[in-house]
Length: 188
Image 1 (spheres, one colour):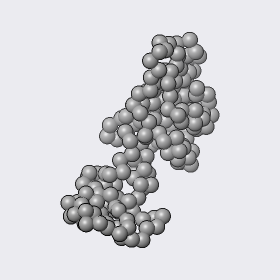
Image 2: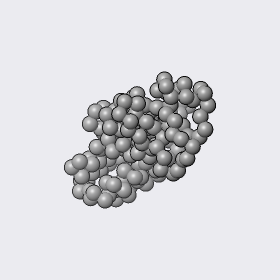
Image 3: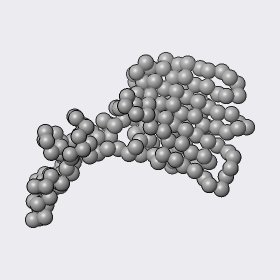
Image 4: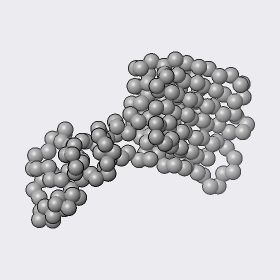
């Protein structure tokens, strides 16, 4: 999943036009009539909307679209490890404010109650590590054994999975630090 900037934040419709600012050309007027773009005028500010829903006129910025997608996440399950060093497994439920941490080699499970502030900080951290824009699969083809990982994004509609074998997103270390911060326990 990548951030869905061109999806109405109110109803989910994909009948969305990007808002274009500046002096319009003849082609721009034609594209606006076809619903492909929306002319936003000549003045642009930091808060100027970037997207327009063609049916209801709702307008929003890319930041609002990002927040809407991250607010759909209701939980997360992440695991990382390998055969000889064992696996770390963390499950975080945002709605019931619980975190469960497990390590395969010692068999222990730790359950932790989460605060609203801790969850909010964690979700902000997910945005920083560009979590929703990770590829589905990261794989190093020339290594047969080593470290495998999987992250499942839990949502109301459909869960999303990201995984890898000996290869990671650029933000992986920051993601592991984020898990370590919210759990208070190791995750590498």
